[in-house]
Amino acid sequence: MLKFLRPTRRMSMAVERITARELAEILKDPARRNSVRIIDVRDSDFIGGHIRGAVNLPEDNFQDDDDVDAIVLDFKAVPQIVFHCMMSQVRGPFCAKRFKSRMEIILEDEPSKPDVRVLYGGFQLFGREYRNDPELVEDMDL
Image 1 (cartoon, helix red, strand yellow):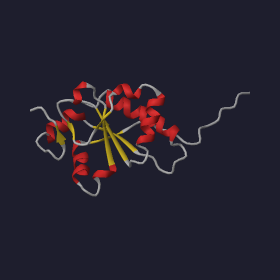
Image 2 (cartoon, rainbow, N blue to C red):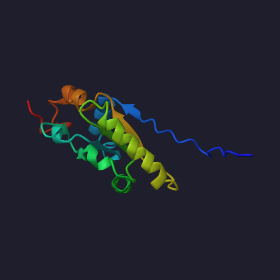
Image 3 (spheres, rainbow, N blue to C red):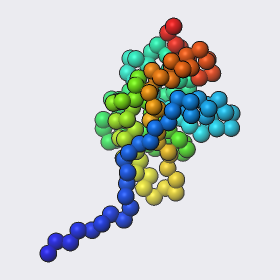
Image 4 (cartoon, helix red, strand yellow):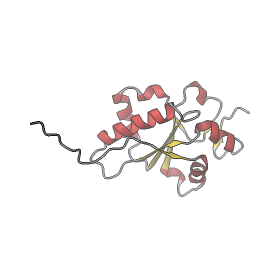
């Protein structure tokens, strides 16, 4: 007789969204801005404008487990990580899910883990809303 074990805890790989407005509020708040890191997974389309302070790690960095594990270790102490691409429909969510799945393994015994989010509407929406705010967007092609 086969006996199946139930997992002791359920790991959800769903990634919640954060709106442009919510992210802008965090970035404009001196007490909170250091609690978030933005990972922009765009390739050449990073040039032409991006969220101020965003780390550009193109999607190719999220293909190999060893590469993703290294990224997880680099950002393990960050309370919140926001992933995005141009529209956050494919690349951003894919990379966020890869990060989150590897994070659950690599940081399994850690007391806390980063809160992983995807920017709703991606840079397209964020840039449209905040393109004229140099506190939030830099290197924007007008």
